[in-house]
Image 1 (cartoon, protein in one colour):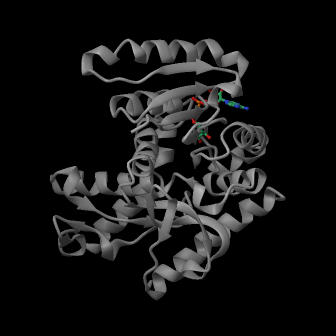
Image 2 (image 1 turned 120 degrees about the vertical axis):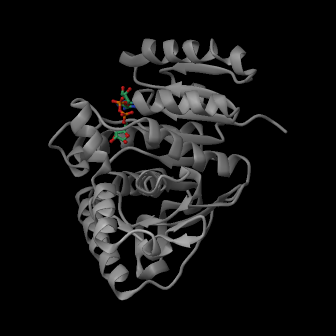
Length: 311
Ligand code: APR
């Protein structure tokens, strides 16, 4: 089987970790692209990661570049280009700058890697993935936003910590936008198959849900000068791996809804099957009235930010 080629657009905190994890999973050859000012940084990161490969017996070619030509023919493109939050900022505060950046990125990805499966990570996620889709003209099955994978992982981590059980044995799903209005589907969460509603009382669960909603902000506050990067990188790699290996994993992802869950024309977090066809299917299921109300609320927030893109 031919090796996959993975292009990382943006080689900052998340980009560097994407390269590291992709290399350690031997997902393919990796090109880290960044602007000319950051060329030395991405070339340095590529060399540094290359020099750890002998330890694990991993075989990947990793390069850094500021020339878009080098991403030619990529199978997967993961976009983290943009600025991250600082304390006191919402994800929405990033829209002005990151919209300009995604416009440039989308035009170049279209030019050099028009067959790639594209995973957008830059914030505000639901609007930036929408902008990429509109500007690039890519088909809807080849564009997705990374948010639910991270929000679900955060929720799972907090539940595992609460109950003192393996992180692996906690399952749950977070839908909706990547923001404070995200919608954790509590009734679907289980620990080793046991509903968490049987294990954690409602008040405590509400606290855990709230911590999940603001988990990104909790880290922004601790860092003081940037936002989370390890878990976002791992989350995006899970999605890329499912595409490259045709695993057909069901991952909450910001996918373009066209009628699913009563949403039309917006990217929003829904359970998504990712395989060699890209977004192969959105898994729709009946929501309770409360969940529906919450999803409409999150949709309103996404619509507001998308409207500001004027796309
Ligand atoms: N083209 C390519 N890369 C760019 C461009 C551009 N036009 N403009 C900026 N970049 C690069 C920066 O040079 C930097 O290396 O994007 C990188 C972003 O890295 P960080 O500042 O370290 O940010 P990071 O923590 O990786 O977050 C990236 O993902 O989760 C979101 O909110 C987060 O929007 C932010 C993005």
